[in-house]
Amino acid sequence: MDNITSLIGGFGDVLSPMNLLIALLGVTVGTAVGVLPGIGPAMTVALLLPIAQDLEPVQGLILFAGIFYGGMYGGSTTSILLNTPGESSSVVTAIEGNKMAKAGRAAQALATSAIGSFIAGTIGTLGIVFLMPQVAKFAISLGAPEYLAIILLTFTGVTAVLGASRIRGLASLLVGLTIGLVGIDFVTGQQRLTGGLPQLADGIDVVVVAVGIFAVGEALWVAAHLRRKAGEVIPVGRPWMGRSDWSRSWKPWLRGTVLGFPFGALPAGGAEIPTLLSYTAEKKLSKHPEEFGHGAIEGVAGPEAANNASAAGTLVPLLAMGLPTNATAAIMLFALQGWGIEPGPLLLTKEPALVWALVASLFVGNTMLLLLNLPLAPAWAKLLQIPRPYLYAGILFFASMGAYAVNSQPFDLWLLLVLGLLGFAMRRFGLPVLPLIVGVILGPLVERQGRRSLQLTGGDISGLVGGPVAWFCYVLIVLALAWPLVAKLVKARRGGSDLHDVETKTEVSV
Amino acid sequence: MTVLVGYVPNAFGEAALSAAVEEAKRRHERLLVVNMSRDDVLVDAHRAGQDQLARVGRDLGELGTAFEVRQIEEGNDAAEALLAVAEEEKASVLVIGIRHRSPVGKLLLGSVAQRILLDASCPVLAVKTG
Image 1 (cartoon, helix red, strand yellow):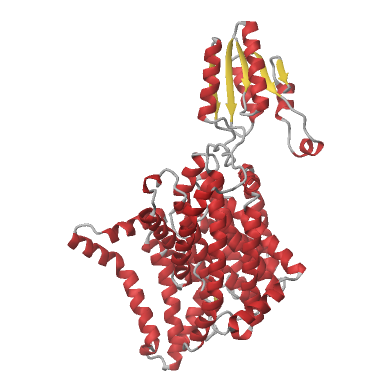
Image 2 (cartoon, one colour; image 1 turned 90 degrees about the horizontal axis):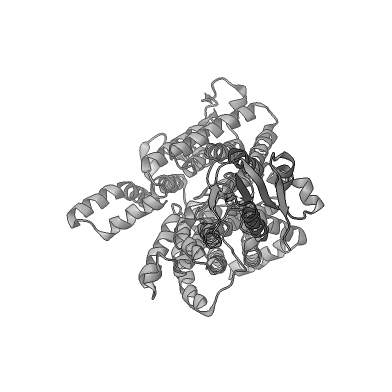
């Protein structure tokens, strides 16, 4: 019951007028950027990093958590109304949601997604309350080799499990690790990859990398595809649900939550797999299977709940072990470092007030989001009528300002442009962005843990595989990497199994 | 010669359309209905859907006037697009719907109607909703 007491303490910290105002600001901005396709919570958090560095850590985290949760709510609005999912996690929502909207049931689709998100978010946050301290307690007992293995497992997760292509994921991760290497080696003091430029001696600031890859890269990408026929306005109306909608939605909400949270909490989780699993499960369990493909409400309720529960789950590895599994969490981790707080297993012991205030703010933010999204859905949909040139000009302006603000040196603007072009090229060639940003942020950490393990054993390679946890992680990594081969062999033997069918579907939709 | 009308799927567009029908009958000329949607926004409230355009076509067909319905989906300036069509088709009159705007609205956004009124080389019939 310690958790509950700490949580109540956290509520005490959050429920001050200033913090509530910041939470409201966060969820409003988050919903807005979630609604606009192409602008996600990760980009927004990256753009706000320079500003957040001047806030108190608690307030900065409340702001970021609000944007993170808000982006989930907003993303589903776009998927339902436009069939253009802003993030990979709402791809599945779009399948049935857009069909419902076209059949004139946009209001019900938006309502079931907002209420489902609220329920899943609340249960998921409760899951954080009970799971996170246990994971943190476990993580403290881990030594450098085990920690190294877990980070490597995270790398495998974000490159091999989440993306469409392992090779592209790995390429993106390696680019990120390379960017993370730039600067002075912390053991020997040698300059690495600086090309003799004194500005690079301190390494490339993560703010510049994140803003360049997310904001500038995305703006250039959209600018290259600006001309597109406009969609029609789908009349939204005030979201509401009838009795039959409620009775058809509540079970998918709960099932989606149960599916989503564990996947998010894994250090190699993500929202794509649980949303897809939830969709398939609802399709099988539904009493109206014939409606699937023509706008079944279960197909919106389940995946939306899974999506939000998994978003809540990703905060468990972030807070308990300092491991981010999505782009927004990665940038939140960097923000923590910027405030001089060392993320990792000791975070909860050293900064309990901060962590519990953050968790309490998730409950508050989630409630605000329901109140903000349910009655105001038509207003949010109006955002889609903003001409895109205005939007992206604004993003480029804030991106340049943010990058310049870090060190006040013009060199960073050139760096921003180069990284922006890199981000553009990655989108052009279908490379996922998440492995890169995780590589940049975790790269230095994995290097430190690896070298520490090697120092412990005097350079003997066996020091890297100490302890059962490390063994377990390496087995999982091998399994994840060998999975396509295994699936192929199994398929060849059985002549086309169901499992492989699901696997290929994942790859298409992610 | 042609009567050209800028159609949008709302009360202003309907008013303009019915005035244009009257005008086409009076002049014994062909009616050209143009709907313009911008290509730099995600959704455009001025875009007429397929069913709306089909309904317009059906209504006009029943009235027995010669007509054509055209949808423009490129560009981001309705005034420019409409004036270009008027020039190209040598329109004898251009029919548009106009409305009141708040001072702030006038300050922030240019007026499509005003630019059509000032720049058109043919007479313009500006219709208000009743």
